[in-house]
Figure 1: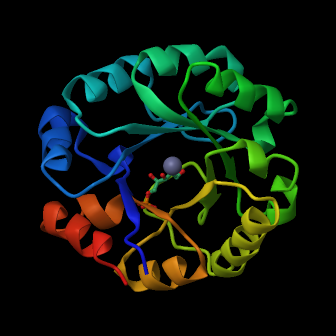
Figure 2 (figure 1 turned 90 degrees about the horizontal axis):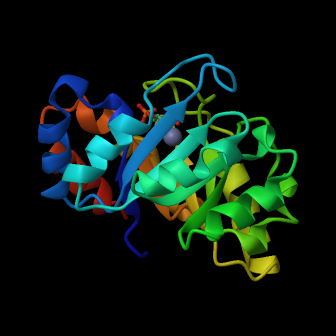
Length: 218
Ligand code: DX5
Ligand code: ZN
């Protein structure tokens, strides 16, 4: 099986030492840095905003994978692009004009993703899957790191994989929430391409090695 892309979630990093954390990721086998933006409206938590993303980008040699858990993302897409995002995902549940949101993201020459909450069925992606670069499958309810992985994710990933084949889409499947070494292999078998991991990486004794082990998942 091909190696997964690994995207550590900076939400779980030590914010008082962001430069050091980003440099640790630079030196690791991480493929992307996953950046969680929470607005306190779409989700009940507030994470951080544009100046922090700019600061991460200043030190990062890895692409920034920005996950917008915000309402009206169209107001901020350009600003996140300017702050360094190379991939921006918006939530299907927050976007009544999702196709327009995707067009807007792509107009900046970057990759566009759609994130779906645990209750949103795979079929909700059928008319957008051919237009996007990534599906971010939430395997916890968005808003907080360190939550328990929802087991129903495996079957949903399989359904999305089939949809991608049926619609001749190039979208990657990213899994976000509660990912660890126990579920990584089954997720890849179900069709996942990208593993986001926050607490599993940053709370481990040796994040560098934890990333390496996730990357080597078979
Ligand atoms: C949850 C965020 C996740 C989170 C993952 O709302 O979207 O990206 O940082 O953290 P862990 O891996 O700790 O569940
Ligand atoms: Zn996320």
